[in-house]
Image (cartoon, rainbow, N blue to C red; front, top):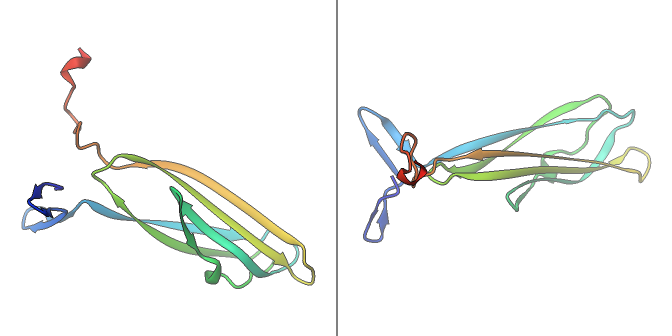
Length: 130
């Protein structure tokens, strides 16, 4: 995969033995929102998920969250598995409490690494490391 033939690059193929093979996978994030307060968050004014600087606005995915209510929102990104890289994922939410203009907010960040280094495939030892 990723071989170039002129201006064409092979990124996906199918054969009987391996089936469909692609450079890309879809990563799905399940974001769990729980209102641990005693009043509803009647209006969500900001709800975003940012992966390596690319922000997805999810504000329209949630209208309100009642007390002790939990909802799960999913979002996806495409990962190129031929490039080993770190991913930084940050989710931010801001809501307005019922009957007031008091805002409540939260943020969560996690990191992960995905992909294979095609320049150093597994099992290949760099001769200069001896």
